[in-house]
Image (cartoon, rainbow, N blue to C red):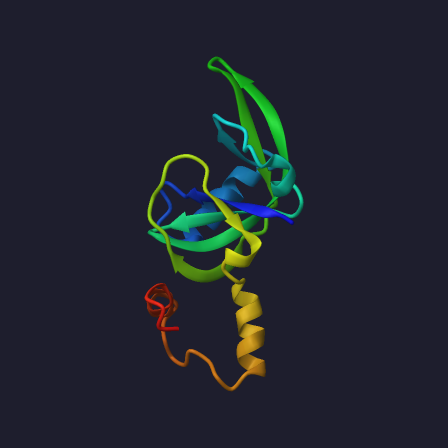
Length: 144
């Protein structure tokens, strides 16, 4: 069973801003998020795990982890989390800032928006005209 990483997207105010920033970085080569420490649950992460990006206090988008690389600079060894170029938007979940690794189990991970759209079309019960932010807030309060 895979696990996922929660990472705060520092400097991003929206999914579109993260997408734009990453598209510029793709010109130089594969996407790599550099960290000081290697994830301790590496094997589980590489079994289909993703990075779930926290933007403005909400988990908003995920990116599949393709591999972990050993990197070196003047400070010593670091870990490069290699990411797939596709950003998959998820349902919003409130999540505050944190330090260090935060893992997310499969069962606790937000669903992809594309899956929710399919479910909404198949199901008469939906969240109606609620904005995604309002729906996220209601879910965090246990009302949805």
